[in-house]
Image (cartoon, rainbow, N blue to C red; front, side, top):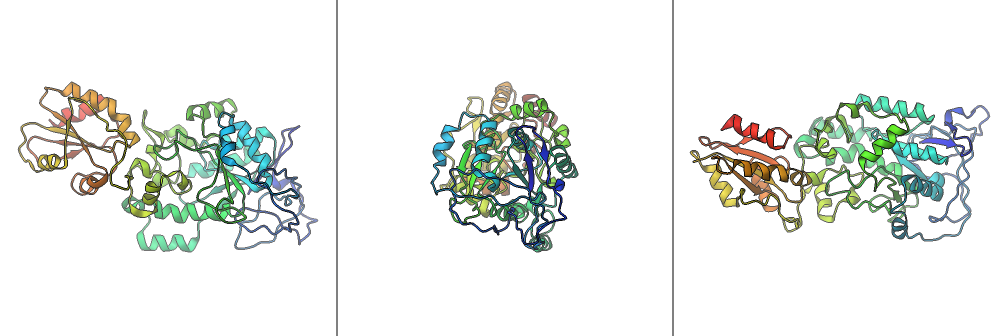
Amino acid sequence: MAFAVTSSSSSTAISGSSFPRSSASPDLKVPQIGAVRLADRHATVSLSRRRCAVKPVNAEPKRNDSIVPLAATIAAPKISEKVEVEDFEQLAKELDNASPLEIMDKALEKFGNDIAIAFSGAEDVALIEYAKLIGRPFRVFSLDTGRLNPETYRFFNEVEKHYGIRMEYMFPDAVEVQALVRSKGLFSFYEDGHQECCRVRKVRPLRRALKGLRAWITGQRKDQSPGTRSEVPVVQVDPVFEGLDGGIGSLVKWNPVANVDGKDIWNFLRAMNVPVNTLHSQGYVSIGCEPCTRPVLPGQHEREGRWWWEDAKAKECGLHKGNLKQDSAAQLNGSGNGASHANGTATQSDIFNSQSLVTLSRTGIENLARLENRKEPWLVVLYAPWCRFCQAMEESYVELAEKLAGSGVKVAKFRADGEQKEYAKTELQLGSFPTILFFPKHSSKPIKYASEKRDVDSLMAFINALR
C-alpha cells in the first residue's frame, strides 16, 4: 500500500523506503490492504471519529503468501473511542457543496490509516495531489490487471517518484486468469461482454483489497458515465463491497470529485503541474485495460472509449456496480450487454421527434428490410431513448432529416431496445446504440455506418457516397 507520510508544516512527503530496517523486531505486524488486521485491539472502533497517530516502525513485515507486504511501514493506529453510528447520508448532504480538498480532508481525518485512495492511472491522480496538499498521511493502491497499456505502467512509476510513495498493487488470481484464457481465449469479452473478464481481473482483487480497509476514496464524477454515475454522492456506505469488520455497511466510500466537471479536474492538474498519463495526449480520456480502451473523437463522451461494442448503460466494470439500478445490475451480472427496464422498455421520453422523420414499427422495419427494389433509399437509426450517445446525436440527426426532406431519401428511426433488441441484433446488425443503417434502392441488405462521427456533414457524406 502506498503511504505518503506528510508533515503539515513542511509538506515534505516521506516514503516508506526512507525508514531504516536493520533494528527491526520480528514480532511487529502492520496493517495492510487485502489482509486481516493482526494488531491487538483492546478498544471499540468508531466510524464517526477516528484520529490515528501513524508512527513509523523500523520493521520489515514477515512475508505471507496470501497478502502483499506494505511498501511503506507504519504502526497500527491506537483507537480508544466510544462506538457511534455515523449518518453518512446526512454527511453527504452537508458536504455536497464542499470542495474536493475539504472532502478529502474529512475522509482522511475520520478514518486515518483505515482508508486508502484507489488509483486507476488516469486523471484520478488529482486525488493523490489533494491528499498531498492536505498534509495528512495517506495510502494508495491500484489494480494491475495484467493488460494495462505500457504508458500506464510508466505513469505509475512516475507518480511514485513525484510523490515519494510506493503504491501497493493488487493482482488477479493466476489460476482464475489461466482458466478463463484457456477456456475462452484472450479476447472473449468482444463476443460475450466484458463482465466476466473484469470480474476475474478487477473485481475480485478489489474485493480482497477492501477487506483490509474501513473506507476507500475513488475518482468517480457525476459527468463520467451515462446512466450510471449521475447520482454519485460525495460519501456513502458502500452498497456492494465489505470492509475490515465484514458485513453490509462495514465499508464507506468517498467520492471527493463527484460534483467536479472533467474540465475543472484538468485545469487543476495543469495548475499544479501534476504528472499525467501520456495516453491523454493521444486522445484517451477514460483509461482502462489496453484491449478495452481507445481514443475518443471530438464531441464524443469520454466513456465511448470504453467497451465501445456495448451499450451505454453497460459501461461499468463492476468496481462501482452499486451505481447501477436494480435492472441494470442484472445486466452486469450476465443477463446481457445492454440495459432495459424489467418490462423490456425504458421509461425515458422518446427522442428524434420531427415531422421530417418516419417512425418505424417492428412490422415497418421488417417490410423495409425485405424489399429488394425500393422507390427511394432509407436512412434508419436504431436507438434507445435512454442512451446518452443517442441523445447526443439527436440534434444533428433531426437537422439531417430536415435537410433531406423532399430529396428522395427517407430518414427514419426504429426503437431497438427492450423486446426489439434481440431482433435488431440478429437481423439489423445492432452492436451498440446508436446504430445507423442505409437501405439502398436496389439492394435488400442494409449498409452499416461504421464511423462514430455523427455530425450532419459526416452523415451527409455517407449518404451521398451510396445513393
